[in-house]
Image (cartoon, rainbow, N blue to C red):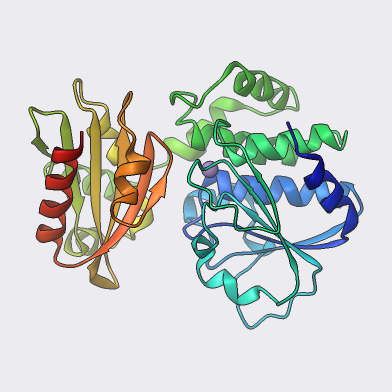
Length: 320
Ligand SMILES: [Mn+2]
């Protein structure tokens, strides 16, 4: 249920800044643009500003021209809406767009959300921020047009792992049925999102899969991607999205991890955690200053790749 405080706040202001987290994916981008569509139907202006442009994967959404990434740009707005951010730090350099004394509205579905806003609406058992924006359309009684249906669908399919994760509910499917009725072609969207890899990307995947190791009687599976592996194929880190799911897909594996060396700083190691069943990887990532959801989370550590892997694998082995 949409909180009445959210409705009242959105009714009150006419110019919005919409932000989301760094390395935006389907849920953050989809929610931002579906919300922009809703606000415009309500006769309100909004500007989407992110730290950087989205990954190439999202080019089919045709949104790049509507995202401000130049932090020197002056934006006129009365209130900020942060989407899909458990902590405000997750907006990264987009924080530079923030002005003092502007009201901050926090709309999110992470269980670890810190209620950092002046107005907070957090639904930890909802599949995606996209589902929450859908509920806003219903609360304001605004019809969902084709573009917004596409944005919401991309948000939901991304965060539910194509309707495979525990967060997928009958409500999720009911919403998606309505979105498809707006004219979406699920097979074509799926192809754009998941069957669009280049040969180089699959070669990188092959190399990444060759690094898979196991711990704790094969209940833990982990893999890595180094800067030199990326350099070999002239690829960037964003193409590794989804690689960790191969480790997670192994029978008996409860926790899967991928360690990603940052190409511009080899001592910066991004770690994605995925779990099946009861293991809570939000808690595991929080041991290292990160967070996320019960079955999908992440953190960033500094140090030598091999040492970081050992430290994290040892901790996870003791914790599950
Ligand atoms: Mn999300």
